[in-house]
Image (tube, rainbow, N blue to C red; front, side, top):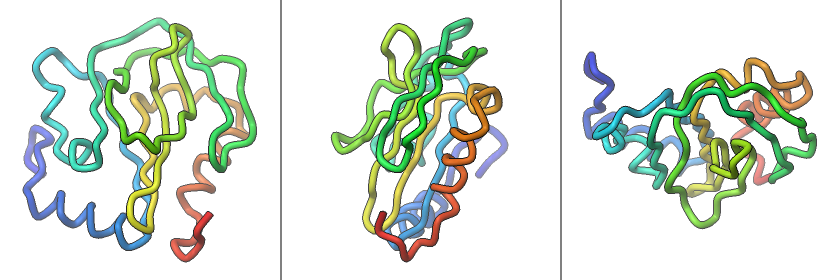
Length: 144
């Protein structure tokens, strides 16, 4: 990866191979300035697109896939929203206006989880963040 966050094709291929073979990947985007939505070639490879700069919203959790604990709401300080994700995406969290900010989907034998900002999970209840990290750390041999 170069200084400005652009990945070499070999790096993108390594992520793709890792997840295809059973790895779990957490894609975290900050905020996306106008004209920069296509800069994240790793997210693009997996069919995820983040856009915009959003601040001062409410982040709400929902049950999806391995996540069985909801949280009512958490302050969303700053980040982007997800405007494109694979059809098989299981939503995990939204802003209070319904825009998607977090989801998970299978890719090959692995899983990709995406999050439009790291700040909400820092403030989410411990059971939710515990499940998030347990899901990412679960053995690659598991098909759950």
